[in-house]
Length: 257
Image (cartoon, rainbow, N blue to C red; front, side, top):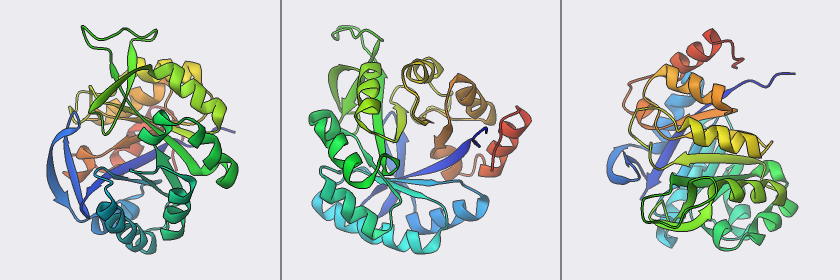
């Protein structure tokens, strides 16, 4: 059975508002997360992803309230990430209404967290969010040429991105959200080489993120190996609708819901 390709709008939430920038910087306010989530649900989004990008303790309280209101409004799976440091944090978000929870920085700093969450809640609940970039001139090279970053893309780790996703898949993540920092917000297309490299390394579902600007970019990402495609700016600013992306995928021969 062929699994349908999922189209996922992403809401980067800071202080209870949706924000968006380019290459993870210069963030501007784009709207109310509950209103936007409701719109995407009615447009046929397959899932929604919330990323609490400030993830401070006060931000967490705001996010829980927003997650709860959103879960009441929408009928598609909701993934929430940002500031998750323990299995208890996962439990809190699931109680608030999340269906899946994303981890990033805390898992890089303490990889045992992956197994702890997966054993307690099941792999299907756990999404590993990987903020990766091409190794820059002067940086320590990695085998794949890609490195993992943490703290919202602000800190390089020197850790090879492909090695990291391979380890995480074995440790029990159910899905990988691959964010390209180099292409984020550029509208020039996804990092297809990085998608293909991750696809060759792991069998778990792969969500491609970062760089969508037109419908054919989504098609190219799926051809490169993505099982789902995620975008923010193109949907938030109305440059493209969820249905247009699905139409393009369908025309290219890929099954969609």
